[in-house]
Length: 244
Image (cartoon, rainbow, N blue to C red):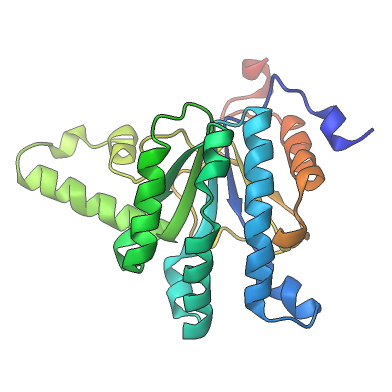
């Protein structure tokens, strides 16, 4: 039986976050430049986004470019920015009723890329299906630091008191405040770490790591991750007896 046939469509995770790792290593194994791996990886994004939308996932958040990625060689960063510009296919989003959104320090992105992103965000804002969220120029520590700054200003301006600050209030100041925390976080490429991604939000996420490089992570690999998620018992600090 295929993994697709094993999926319980009544227990699809509401929010799936993915660390799309392994593009460069995938390309090097084939004697190609790292940018070729990113190109094929961009194709995988469309495949997985369409399938996630079909399954009923409500939020798909993809770690596309971290704040640390700005430290990569200039030619690779430039190629990634061009690829990002070219790979935003608004037609695909409209066809699948996908709303496009972005989180991160987008002011650092080149102006043509920002304009392309904002146009797609505006044109898909009325779509009511899945939200596809790209984490661009993003890191969790940056996000948490920015939230702390906003809270400090709110307290300074008398809009908030120290006693009113709790985890729910703090979450309101994060860039992800429009969506629930991830139910499932997937990392491809064999590494076993979160790499500064959604650290606050993934406190109780189910983590799934696989060796498959992102360009090879197609539908059946995605189904496998969903099946693994559905076998787990999510207790959120409670006992099994309390959950049942």
